[in-house]
Length: 137
Image (tube, rainbow, N blue to C red; front, top):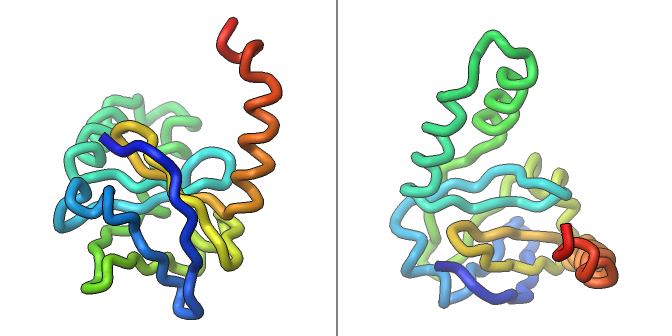
């Protein structure tokens, strides 16, 4: 289970330190892809397989289903940690997430999300203002 939020700087080579609390649970290989609201999502091998199987259940003849599968799989990168516990975020994913120099890495139960710190701050401020309404729905 991934919990908490951690702020880390991205270095000049687009590498970011993964929180030590997350490293062991990630396993040797994991997957990084585009997520909602300009976030990036990290899936463990197990979670990625579950997600893949769910996407395989979608009816291929449906245009939206094809688009979802194409977007998901074409933007996904198989990764591992370097010796210093960092991941390398490619330019496509970095640009999508609008990550400049500082990122926030959050645990979201079975996945990890990476956000540009400013984008996260704007998002969370908006969500927290409406938290009561969101919880009521």
